[in-house]
Amino acid sequence: MQLSMTTRKSFGAFTLATDFNVSGDRVGIFGVSGSGKSTLVSMLAGLVEPDDGEIVLDGDCLFSSAQVINLRPEQRRISMVFQQHCLFPHLSVRNNLLYGFNRCPKNLRTIDFDTLVAVLKLDGLLGRGVTNLSGGEKQRVALGRAILANPRLLLMDEPLSALDDSLRFQIIPYLKSVSEQFCIPYLFISHSLLEMRLMSDQVLNVAGGRIIGISTAEELARQRLGASQIGYINLLRLGRSSEDGNLYSYPWGAARLLLSAASERDDSMAELSSKDIILFKQHPEAISARNLLQCTVRSLFSSGRKIGVELDCVGNTLISEVVQEAVTELGIAPGGTVYAAVKASAFRMLPG
Amino acid sequence: MIQLSSTDYDAIRLSLQVAIAATLLSLPFGFAVAYLITFVKFRGKVLLEVLVNLPLTLPPVVVGYLLLLLLGRHGWLGSLLNKADIRLIFTLKAAVIASAIVGFPLLVRSLRIGMEGIDPQLLNASRTLGARWHDTLLTVILPLSVPGLVAGSSLVFARSLGEFGATIIVAGNIPGITQTIPLAIYEYAASPTGETMALSLCLVSVVISLAVLFLHEMMAKKMARRG
Image (cartoon, rainbow over all chains, first blue to last red; front, side):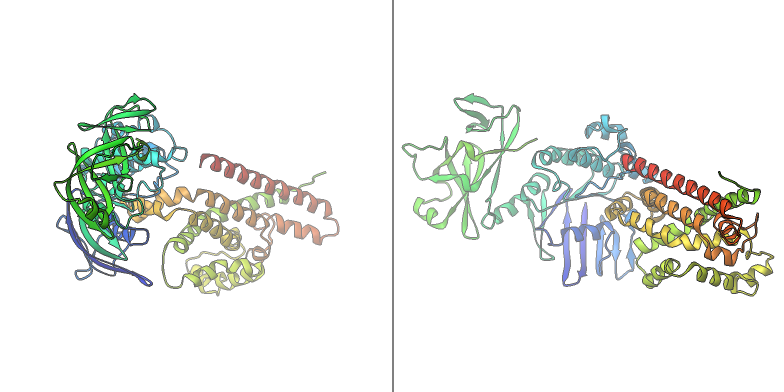
């Protein structure tokens, strides 16, 4: 997918001005509420008309004020998954799923209904109405409906924000796998950096009605470490746990970690804030934290008043944050060795 | 004891005919106007809203008189219809038109309330899934407006059953041709011996109204359960 968007749209005192060129199949649009993300995707979908400018998707002009082109939403082949599922309440799950499929030109009906239903695990729901489905089921139906229309671009406008944490992490694999399996590029909109890192390769950072940068989700997370109240969130892929006294021991690459949270799964994800990692220059004599990892410093980066320290822990990566004084005092420098202490309770298992 | 003459039976039949025809006649126009007011941005929307609601505030006799001026033999529309050999004044058709116009604001109001409750994002979802505007109108807006349609239809039907002022001016009070229940009751009330007959028709009127209201409530409950 190649998208070029040079547009301007004003609502009263607020003006959204976009000027970017982006390519890739997993693009994110990140920004806080009110930054203009939703207006941007609405203009792309044809639901809001820009005041002026041009939108070109894969070489096709969708909007051009100079050439007086403005394709209607149904002509753009851009499907949307909305924040609030937006399922048609008078239709069954099956008829909701088929709504876009039936309106798609016959030569473009390439998505197999049964395969999609199987991937999204909707088999048992097809005959039901949509009003009594759970939040996660509704969002899966909304996703299936958008995919079955076989769009050339899928817009996901904060599709997870209306879901609670456990549902959110259940839906993410569906969002990723469905678009990958059916080769549909997507634009994922969110104000959550964690969701951005899980869903996108490239991220457009929107603030105050402007695109203030294009980077990878990882780079964006590191840039925002200093400004974020929760720090940088390390995502750790853990293996199957075993009991170890009152704690649970998890394999983490070649290392092992002790966590207070249990998980029955063979493969689970845990998050750990950069704020919860304490660095020591030398091996401490005694410490209450149950995890003490010998690490090599890979690099340092500054973000606001904080210094991010990228650590290599037996092949795994951890980001810790310290202040400049600590860097000087501990002599932290790339290639040096430090000890990272983490309490067993500092990890948070991600549901899913 | 209920006493009904053959002209009373005619009045009951004509009342039902007028109410059903007025409801069916006003439905497509009511739906179109409610759609325009709710979903379309255009200049003069306030004027349209005022015009639609005008029959609600005008005395029905005024509505009837204006219709008489419009549809009469020398009226703006009436003269055109006269050339085509179409006569409306003092026919059942005039009673239908009068009832439809007087009940029209009630229909539009009910439909608007229903349409305003439709999440605009559903319409956006429909458009991004490939539906053109008329497809969205038929497959999303219309089915979701059914509760408003049912409520509005019940109101127009009930209003038509009770319509008197406009009807007597444009359709007259001709037994067996344009005389509906209210007109027949009016005639009995004016007669010193018509009290029993008037009461009988009042009772019939109450029974029909109750039946309409019960039917409306049952349909509303059924739709609420389904929704």
